[in-house]
Image (cartoon, rainbow, N blue to C red; front, top):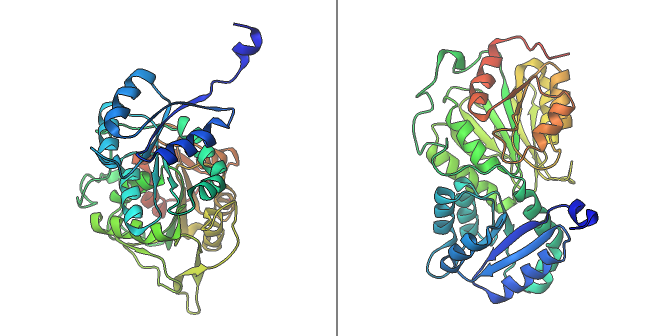
Length: 366
């Protein structure tokens, strides 16, 4: 092997699993055109894929949802139980597709690509950059297999709380803000399951399309003791409630006359590359200073880091998820590099720290 060959970066080895020959062909063309990606094989269904995975040992799988013999969700469950590996789902942006994709993300899929339903060639071509980016990012993700800590189905959040978790509702905390992206569906489910019903109102920005956020809120609401809703403009921020920022619109906190705190949901251009933007939310929280907590979870990119810095400088307590428990240590890493996080914690300790911050002086505030 020559020195130049030895210095070449290792390409991401991908397997495409999709029952459509046309989709397999188009994805192969798109991914193979990226010099950092190698398509090592394709499969029309999970049964064929299972044998090819054993033989080819890919770094990442792209997985269709609707397939013969076994659905993509069933196959994903088996993968995460028997051979955990990064999976990028290929799904439609219908309501049914949203539910299925959210289930896949809860099970441990790293990310998803919205499959076009018409004019496949033209539509897939427009998604080329996003598809390649998500596959390469997935190759760096930390994937947890089935059996690791996950969100309980409907257990009361108080169960298992310890004295160090702090009070259920800190009297001088007005609100908590959480931002997440890739890996956030699973992380938010686990984090919010540890929050008691009396906690301060929580505003959440999770990067996802508009027709996903309402379904995401409904799924969380069905399994948590907290009330979880998609945020609406002017909605009062109440204890024990979680407000999910609608996809395609920005979410912020606002104080009305008389001191009432409400959600402000607005149209607007992308900030830090996203709508909704975590930076947009965190910037609005900074106005309340030490009466808030800001949390930045797993995700690709840097959205939220600058806003978290503003919150910390205003006296808020700020927390970043650590590298070991982040699916993608992007957003939290940038926050740590900017000195925006007063604490860097594993996911399992963040809920307790959020509540304990309500009764502690923020040493990091300036």
